[in-house]
Length: 110
Image 1 (cartoon, one colour):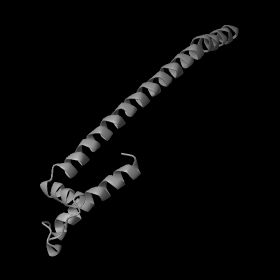
Image 2 (cartoon, helix red, strand yellow):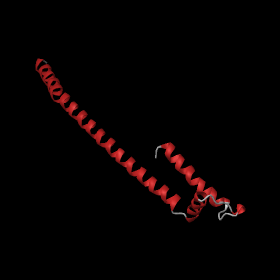
Image 3 (tube, one colour):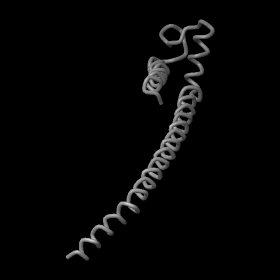
Image 4 (cartoon, helix red, strand yellow):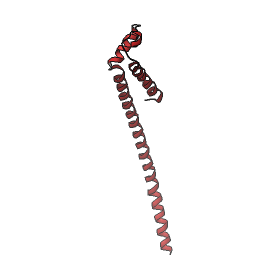
């Protein structure tokens, strides 16, 4: 029985001597991994923001009716057909909807 107790004490000592350093090493690697993942998420966020910006610019600027409405507003001309302008209410709603989308994206931080 005395021999068994010595082996048990020896085993416990080995677990302590080897186990704790391994625990600290694994915690250090976990921290490094967390830092790398955080950096990658930051990069992904920047890429998504750039893609959203390009998509919003395309949505707003590559539409000929939006360009016409902008031109009419800048030159203090009528916009709607009913006021001798060149655009329908649907086109104006679409134009204003683009700005609503931009406001939502800005508010949500995208």
